[in-house]
Length: 143
View (cartoon, rainbow, N blue to C red):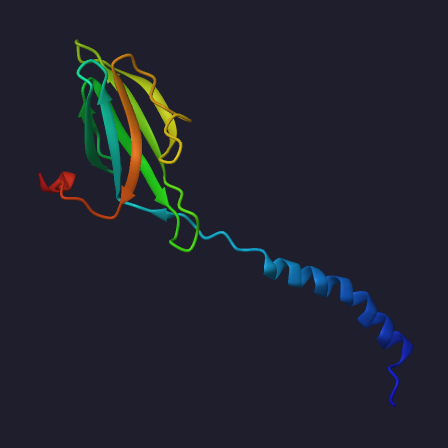
């Protein structure tokens, strides 16, 4: 039987813990990058009439829902191989009767937790429903 020299054996034995760490690194799942979508889909509630309206908005487009100007800046989903998580960054301004707008919300909204970061308004509620790749609504440059 052939024996490994003592120096070589010492080097190999010192590398064994690092090999175990490398295997642990391979065992943890890698988080994929979120997928950016061009359309955010929202639902809005008019608290006075009780009417819920669903509407799609392109990223960086501003739409008017009641007195609210809603502008999504990003809408992300996860790959189908991961647990679904839908989030959007949006800005909401309230338009006054004189036409002046005031920012009332700027932040992330999550479809699975609509109350986590909600638009705080006396008359209107708006929440994220989903992110989409396409919609029947014409793009802003096609109108």
